[in-house]
Amino acid sequence: MGLRVDLDLKSLVRTVPDYPKPGIMFRDVTTLLKDASGFKSCVERLAEPFRTAGVDAVIGIEARGFILGGAVADRLGTGFVPFRKKGKLPWSTVGQDYELEYGTDTIEVHEDGIGAGERILIVDDLIATGGTAEAAIKLVERMNGVTVGAAFVIDLPDLGGAKKIQQMGVPCYSLIAFEGH
Amino acid sequence: MGLRVDLDLKSLVRTVPDYPKPGIMFRDVTTLLKDASGFKSCVERLAEPFRTAGVDAVIGIEARGFILGGAVADRLGTGFVPFRKKGKLPWSTVGQDYELEYGTDTIEVHEDGIGAGERILIVDDLIATGGTAEAAIKLVERMNGVTVGAAFVIDLPDLGGAKKIQQMGVPCYSLIAFEGH
Image (tube, rainbow over all chains, first blue to last red; front, side, top):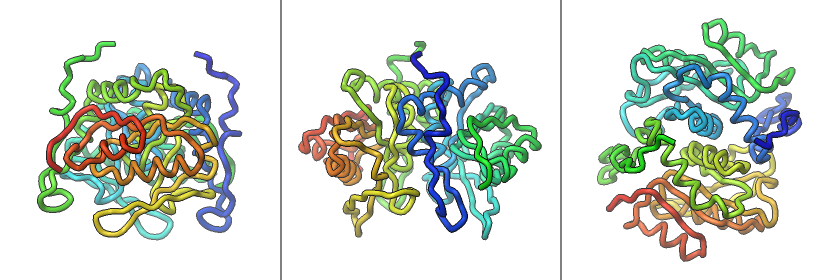
């Protein structure tokens, strides 16, 4: 496939210090997505563990999760379902609140976005505390779907999100990890 | 490929009357994206005209443009660059204002998102008046890139956006059209 198998994805991620606030090292995936080989490698490696998992639909979490989620759905030959921030979807929705550092937020999906028994793969660019991913899994459950996995480019293991998702019984994959937060 | 070549993409789009305000027939692509054959057909047909166009990067416009833009970039073997709403990108940006019905809005890209001479394909789900697409093309120009085309799932021809883009010298493709607005 012409893919550089030794491609160092981590070196393609840009770190922006003190964004969005002092002390945070923001992991910026745009430099990785811009690199044709890096992008291709991400999509392939996110899709690979789920090739035989009988996935019915890939869910992407707004907004960066849409970029890789759409491409992974195309690779797996499934449909794509957006999980959006509150008030962005035009039809009847089901919502799930989740906690932020200060306050709460909500993700929403269309009522017909997930059917009973459908097998769902969740894709996002990064997992930190796992609050959004946890809310997404709960939302899939409430719609009687089955989350067969959650796949991320970047894990920040010190923040415990991946462990939380595994403890919910959902296999969690990531391609690279950064210490700290 | 098992693709139904006679697939009626138009019938997979949901129309939501009076959204976001009375009199508007909102064309909701989520039902099309959810359909595995429909999604695959969209990605294939958006990418097809640009297979030999020497595209260096696909641009997706936040947020729905990310879903198809990422998949089209993967099909073409290029990188992906997000054009985001104001204040969403973590690093140094270049912005372009555009007019809305009331007031103005801004799209932004990272300063290193487009290099001089790079050949860019713009992807979004829908073209209406073309204000956002026009701003995206101007932004590519300002960064000394070359927009080789703009591709949309849905065109609302009565609103004139596709014609405006063509008049800028940029080939504009869409898969389906709806009369009215």
